[in-house]
Image (cartoon, rainbow, N blue to C red):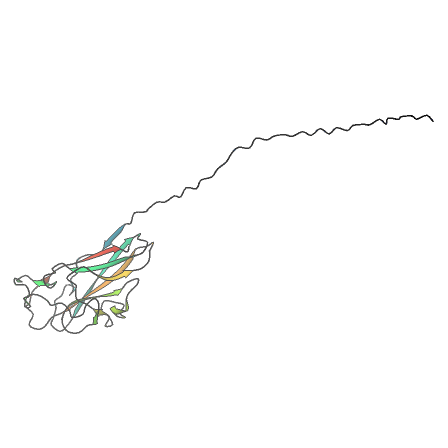
Amino acid sequence: MQIKKIIAGTSAIVLSLAITTVALAETDSYGVNLSVTVEENMTLACGTDVDIDRGGSLTASVPESNSTTCTITTNDDKGYDLSVVNDNAADTVLRHGDYVVVGDTDYSIADYAGTIGTPTTWSGTGLGFSVFAAPDKEAKWGAGSSCHDSNNAYAAFPDSDTVITNVVNYSHDDTTIDVCYRVDVPSTQASGEYTGSITYTATGTL
């Protein structure tokens, strides 16, 4: 028997793969926090001098009143305090031209009996004040809404700088605080003009 070797022809299929390399840039990130502090500003204006009896004269047992409007402009983010002090801490605010001796009641008008901690509705004699209008008016100043309102509560001017009201929030606009002065004297008070001064201070809240 004859054996024949048959070699089958084999077709080789060659796949050619092409790889394209794309160059990628290296990256990194770093965060930077930014900050800035805006300077606080504060301006206070409380109008002109005040003649409490409005150009007239004071009669014993007939109280006279007049007012001041304080305008505060500030960008303080937490509001501000308004305080006041008697500029003559050694004695009362109002004194006569013939006033010589400290405590001379004939030539000085007494302080009103109420205090800033506990203002009272008006009674008796002396010089007192009331905060009758403010953005965040405290109930202790009474329910009055004008200087001559009988519902106002009054205090004496303090001998050291003392907060009388505060505004608790930032305000884009000016704010105003209205203060009423009220005075009465006994019939024994020496006649003539009595003068004195007080100082208001607006301080931003920390």
